[in-house]
Length: 122
Image 1 (cartoon, helix red, strand yellow):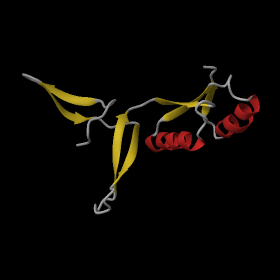
Image 2: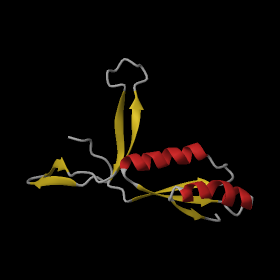
Image 3: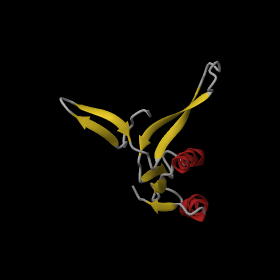
Image 4: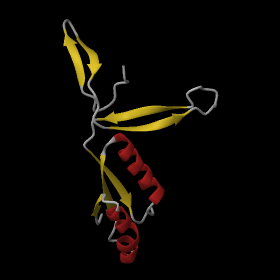
């Protein structure tokens, strides 16, 4: 049986107490790979699911203070793609960033890849 995580739909029996007897199939999930630091394990890496049945993931990224980190945003996008979760990118503090920096370098690549994006001034 899969490990129960946030968002799982369960099947249960109710007698004297309620008992979970199963987990329904997940339509999406967020997971990461846990690597074996000792390198002794035969498996090497195992999947660690931390949320299930997610409709949308909002990835919030600051354009300045702290500065925008493309690799971090891309990592979250990969997690979403791997788990069949629809991502929405929200760029914050756009009022503090130089306009060409936001409009010419960060947003277009994600829009070109057909990700939904939003600009926020806060």
